[in-house]
Length: 108
Image 1: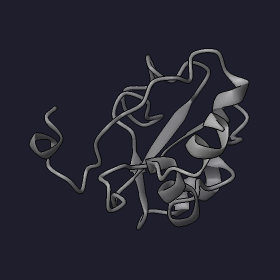
Image 2: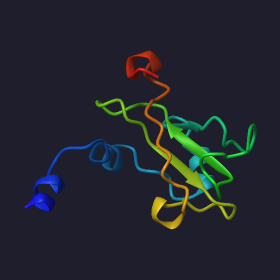
Image 3: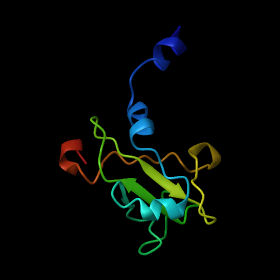
């Protein structure tokens, strides 16, 4: 019963996947300038420490937010492939803001 109830509830992830899909490769992410921008703290042209995204060489985040204020973050490994959270141990860090929405709205 719980699984059926919880699985049908609306959550922010349901809004991200169909509207803000991650580019499959790093090359595609570099070309998708209208929808994505480099993520601060994990940028090959800037701060490439990727402290919260271990194993990534570069991450991008969506410029626009969904109606709930959620934004998409996409990270790429050193071969240029999209990283999936299930494949990496430290992929549980979520950022609860979007560059298109003021941080004070989210209480950050």
